[in-house]
Image 1 (cartoon, protein in one colour):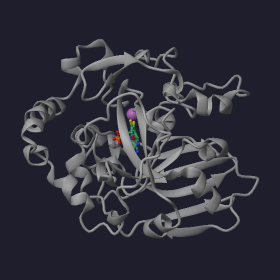
Image 2 (image 1 turned 60 degrees about the vertical axis):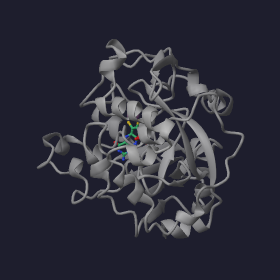
Image 3 (image 1 turned 45 degrees about the vertical axis):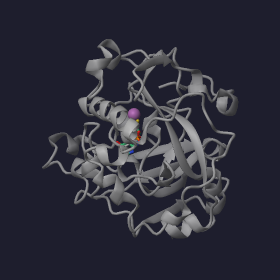
Image 4 (image 1 turned 90 degrees about the horizontal axis):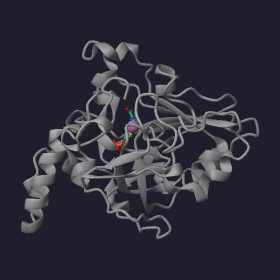
Length: 327
Ligand SMILES: Nc1nc2c(c(=O)[nH]1)N[C@H]1C(S)=C(S)[C@@H](COP(=O)(O)O)O[C@H]1N2
Ligand SMILES: [Mo]
């Protein structure tokens, strides 16, 4: 984002899209005919390894919730797993290989702050307490590209209920892992920019946003445990907000009184705020948000207010006058 800002909307599609995406598309089309997609693509070893030895693998695929489908085609998995923002593993979109260093078991999640009783829960114990479902959501990055993703997970409302927050809790503050040994992006010796960044990656929601029916804790995608580069073993997705709100590989949920300051807001508050609701009419200070590049299609389409999810979420913001709701 800050570091490798795409002036994407100003330059031709061909130049804005990293070469590997194009290579995959060509190969995909060639392979689709032969029915050998899995074997035809390079760099697929990591993805195959992701599910191997994962104790939750048997929970997938989960049934699709027909309420959450979209009019666009699902983004091919091969494209989604090779075009990722995950600064812990580098500042380019090609972090898939590096992210395979992430160890997803054991994975302990802390629930603390203003709750009846703080506790720690392992990912598999948490998975045993919820019912997984598949939801197809639009995913819109603040950099003006988008995807359509078949996530598997459970509503965050379920986690809020398990946490039993006290009435003093107004926000949920979430944290990604901090482990410079496996995340080169967290090692200034590897990336000189890393020591300027406020690790670990933090994001926050109001309690009402966290409990909204759309707010999804993702543990799977494409019918299996979610790939490491996409935020295994558990990440957020709030489809009406810009993608940077949807933090990956979460280790902590804190129920707090004060509004948390997110990773990007901390770095550049003039450009990235707390609310970050999608709005085509409010440009980023450096580029338009009116349209978006749909990855894997070559299409550029109009962006919709709340990314098309206004019927679910617009009411959350009725009384929030004077707030910067769209940055
Ligand atoms: N921990 C962490 N979470 C993160 C990021 C990151 O760099 N680190 N990038 C964010 C951004 S900017 C986007 S657009 C989405 C990208 O998710 P995807 O790679 O699954 O498309 O993850 C978000 N979550
Ligand atoms: Mo993003």
